[in-house]
Image 1 (tube, rainbow, N blue to C red):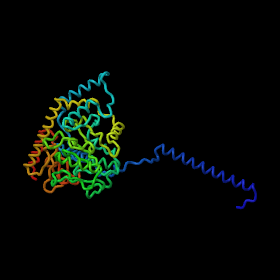
Image 2: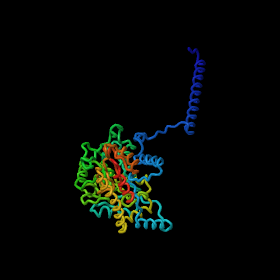
Image 3: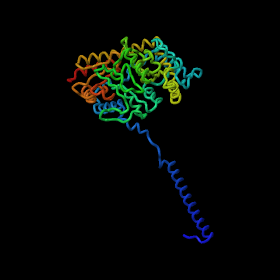
Length: 450
């Protein structure tokens, strides 16, 4: 178009300007409509943590529960004996019950009522732990290096949060599933290979009959090393000299050991360490996890603790300080009445009663171990741990043996493959049932024509 005058130019500019205003007005209307739809929930940009979607199947013990429930519904006349999950069956000790009642009474009086617990836990419990579990064994662990929680399971899953996602973990194989699954949820394990049942970015340390179910030092150096002794699920142990090798290895390679000592109360042999801090140099490389669940029967009460020495650092960063920050932000502490119950475990009466409780379960372990040996099974564990690890007979897979025992003996155990690929063809039985049920279960298994 050829403009012949200023008037023509002004007219054309006005038309363009009005068109631009109309376009802007319509865009604003569209934008406002989009915002309204978003507020009404008709449009969303929320995304899930897709690391959870990488987890194969459900949690091991949830799968077991579903299978047992289905069998029970179909066979209501059958008496099922559960020797699968490591849940205790005997009541809390008199010293613990007395402490619980006393603490409840305190909560009923304004003068002694307690609200939120201190971040690390009450000093009376942390001091009792430090004195009895560590200093009594010659280990210099101070009360302010102990973080009280509601159990070792949550701590073993949460501890990975203070480490970067590009750290590589090493785990025993077979292994307590929480160690691996929580690292999967965080996005630290890479991709899953269904054929090998392994994660690409996890270092697996096979624990087999050839090495007495104890891991060897890995050739590929990890950043985080998960160790559990006495071991769940195999019941194996290592002596102090062997554990010292792990401490030396970690210090040499600037790795951190996450040491699960939940079953230390079941140790019966003198050369098996009760804590990793019995080893020289452990304060600069190891975090220890502990539980009141298995020694004092607190599975339904919930109490545990994590030990992080102040010398333990990554570069110049204190892991004690990081965990304290995480603990204070995300956790409000175990209840006062429960911490008083934990303190009672360390009283003279509490110590005696705890030993009696442990002895009760180890009597079960001995009956399972001896009974299955006499029946021709290849078995291990049951000496320093409440778990018996056996080889499934007749080339059965772990889950085939699970189904066979459930259907033919009405006994529930835990398939070894659920703990990792090296657990395939193995099976775990727990000594945490009642003595009467344990005897009946073993006698049923012995009568099978396997």
